[in-house]
Structures are given as C-alpha cells and as structure tokens.
Amino acid sequence: MDMSKLLKPKGLVSILSLLFGVIFYITWSALYNSWTDISSYSVAVPFTLLGILGILLVLTE
Image (cartoon, rainbow, N blue to C red; front, side, top):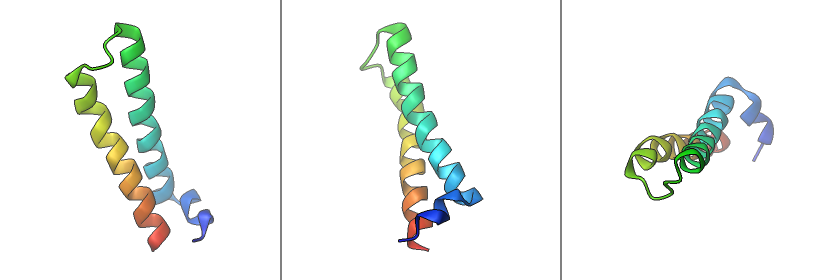
C-alpha cells in the first residue's frame, strides 16, 4: 500500500470527512453532555463511515 495516495485530493477529502465526523461527535457531546444522543449519531456516523470507506478505496486503487 502506498500511503502517498492519501495526499491526493480523494484521500484528503476522505481524511477530512473522517476527522469531521469524529470531531463533531466529541464536540457536540461535550458541549451538550449528551453522549448517547441520536441526533449527534445521525450526523457523525455517515461522515465517519464515508471517511473510512474513502480511505480504503483510495488505498486499494
């Protein structure tokens, strides 16, 4: 696997999506003290999954 593929636009978008999902969940949950709130899951999970799947696709190209 060539990790330099992650520095191309597709890889960067995937990394940013993953980071946004994780940071959003941590920030929202800490601010509102709601670690099991379904609304934070509904935003964080799609971004996180898209980031992980995007990274896997970029690395397997």
